[in-house]
Image (cartoon, rainbow, N blue to C red):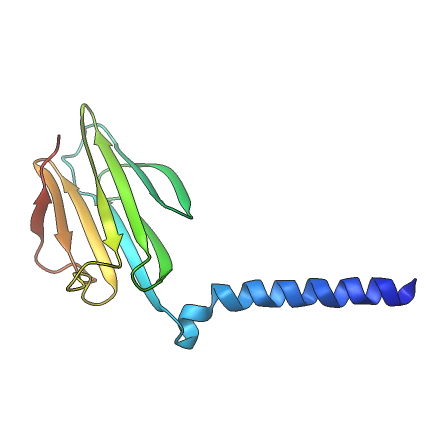
Length: 141
């Protein structure tokens, strides 16, 4: 009976170590680590920005951002396979778009950071952190 318990314990430790290895694989040169920011730079005293982001494998939930707040997340890029999208709502306006796509060529997230910013007239982008000059990417719908 003691041998059975010991085998189960060793197996559990092995499974935990495999999961830990996968979580840190991008830091060991297997994959590249990226960060996506979605920031609220809408006029003060207006509706909050509601942000929902997800991928095929990851549901990142809904976030209510006040002016000057930032929602960000990190992930390991899988070549030709990683895709994250976000849907933003501001009052009666909204916009859904890809915030990261491993198939983008060239990679627009220059230093492995994609920075998206909601402003009154649309969604702006910078591929650097801290964000450099912002370019308008999308209008609100």
